[in-house]
Amino acid sequence: MSRDTLTSKPGSGDAVLSAPDKVFYSMQIVVVKIDEPNSSITFDVVCHFVWAPASVTFDDDSSPQFSRVDESSLPWVPQVIFFNMKEKTETEMSYFMDPSTGCTGCTMNWVIDCYETFELNQFPFDRQLAKVTFYIHGCNLVPMRPVADGGVPCPESFPSLDDQTQCHVSLGNWDLNSIEGFLERRSDKDVIDSEVHCIIELSRIPWFYLWNIVLVIFVLVLASFCVLGVPIDDLADRMSITMTISLTIVAFKFVITGMVPPTPYLTFLDKYVLFSFVLIGIEVVENFIASYATDSNSLRFENVFYSILVVVWLSIHAILVVGTHYQWFYQSWDKVHKLDDETSQTASQDYKAINIEGEDDDDDSEEEDGNSGATNKDGIEVNQSDGENEHHSIEMGSAL
Image 1 (tube, helix red, strand yellow):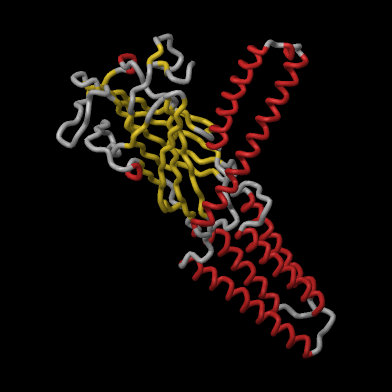
Image 2 (cartoon, rainbow, N blue to C red; image 1 turned 120 degrees about the horizontal axis):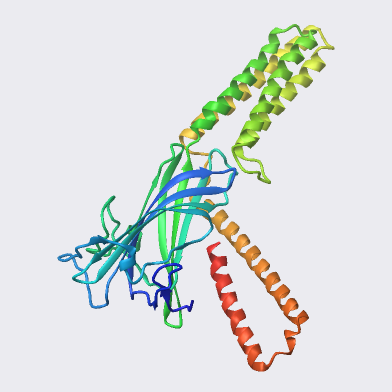
């Protein structure tokens, strides 16, 4: 397929037709599922497209009168390609046409799973960027007003690009902060390719983890302080209490591990669990040392020691509750975007490095097959092909 044409339908044998000069679009996005262990996000994406002959104009006083038609009656439909996609399911495709003006529209609905890299340093006080990017070759996209649920595209007026994307989050443990949409156009030999980028800012609501993990560990560690009521020389009973509680905390650590993907760093919740485990370990050491000293000074020291532990443990959780309310533990959005840019640049460099290695392997294979003796004309043709592949790789790399 040449770079300046598109087929009317994928896989059909129809004639090759050019895309319209302008295609107006709007989209609605619903964040359906965030799967941290598998590093993926599921979106429900609805895109509305409208295009018309160059002689047709739209204003506030007139709009096309659409009626539903079959896809087979349309000479061209947009071919949408999503980046970073693991799986795509088409749920609904609707097509419209105004016979009097030739204005045409369609509504396309997909459920897509996209790869995503999560920054979990502050988990469960983390903020994530969910990204949806799609590409249409040979098509000049222009934003239009979002379409109401169940309605048909009707470009009565065309506001700014910031108004063309709507987003909702169907997850109870996430808050939608904002959504940013921008459009990129690339021209090559009078052909315009369009990329639509949507960046969704999401903040995790941490209360599920605070109630079900932090609160339980808080009570367990407090319960371990009850060994103060066991005689100081009864080491076996004291050790049985602290070791049972420490094993329970280890079990919670395994539960937390299943909630997030493996990371080379400790999350906020990891540090909390490890600190509580260290606190139990300090108690074990203190109980062992105290069992060899039964004088009054040792008893007084143990009372002071456990008083300090209780004050420290309660103070940490008081700060945790206040900090959760005032969002002290969340990273700023500027830092979140900066980390995401660094991750994207690293992924892009790795992608290009893989492509370069692949091209070198291809060149070596061609030399082994005896193609190195090609004529100058053949050499020029090979160079042009390499240039097109490089251009394609750069586009894909930027999308990653």
